[in-house]
Amino acid sequence: MTKLAIFDCDGTLVDSGATIHRALAETFELHGIALPPPAECRKVIGLSLTQAMGALVPDATQSDHCQLAKTYKGCFHRARQEGRVEEPLFDGILDLLDSLESDDWLLAVATGKSDRGLRLCLENHGLHARFISLQTADRHPSKPSPHMALAAMADAGAAPGRTVVIGDTSFDMAMAVAAGATGIGAGWGYHEPHELLAAGARAVADDPAGVARLAKDVIGG
Picture (cartoon, rainbow, N blue to C red):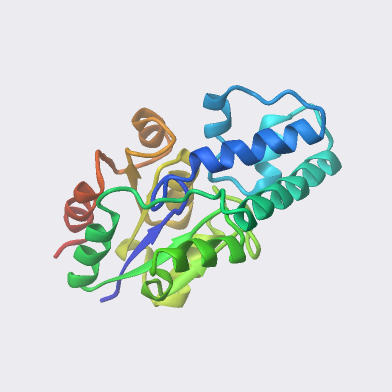
């Protein structure tokens, strides 16, 4: 039977936090709004852009949130054109992908990134072809909605009971629960382990090497 591992991207596969924060700082400066502290900004990584802006500026209107999201996209795109985007893979990610694939897992991504942003990120690391399904904010509601996970499972032909979601935020873990899958927290990312467990993570791995062991425990060899 098919085994599927659905990965988040930012904070799980790649460490993009510094680039995201710079783009947020530029966006808020352009709109004349004070940027919340870095710790607060990190908490919204993983949400789709409009939802993230809503969390950072709760008193603004939906229209304002959409405009902030549009400006952010422009700032991020400009940073990429200027070579200022830093999205390095976390140590151990390649070994984790190799380990899962050698154990007959299919791989997918569910992320708040856009289609274009995810493609560029994965292609930069030579990973694009390794994932059977790529689900983004361009085609789905924001996490913690289960839509992205359900679409990935449909693409792979995997049942929820044979699917794990690997992510660093409470949104990822709540998405897993809503989709009937098992959440494995990425303890090296942007939310604290207790937040991942509170959102429904089966367990939290300290590093990528721990994910393969947990996945095998959950689904079987």
